[in-house]
Length: 164
Image (cartoon, rainbow, N blue to C red; front, side, top):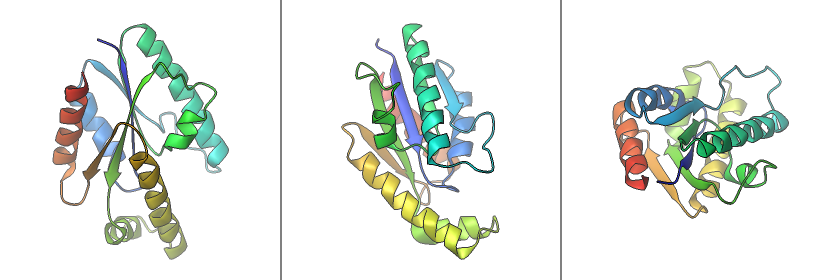
């Protein structure tokens, strides 16, 4: 079986970190990583995100050479992935998105004491990322409001296992 690479994304507060924990517990045969492993610097910007994307693609290629599939879960953008110097057309790429609506984003980020501008920026960001994911050849979207964290994980696990 050919190794697979999954990038699962969503906006802040969508449940990506919780998903990583659930995937670790349930998919021992896949290398699962949080995009933000190693921390996020206070000045994290597009350049930082693109550099992290490069490093994760490089790691996914190394895993693929060893016959292992990879899941990277975090704020990643399909166009940045495909424009990376580390992108390889031979990688068997799949894109997932955790969808939460604008009201839920406001609720979750307000509870983290985000200000109104930061929240609106993240609402816009979520729409941008989702639109990019929907343009990909192979994508999967899970509703992070209608489904609790375990259900979100179960849906992604089912999708991933169908791809094997």
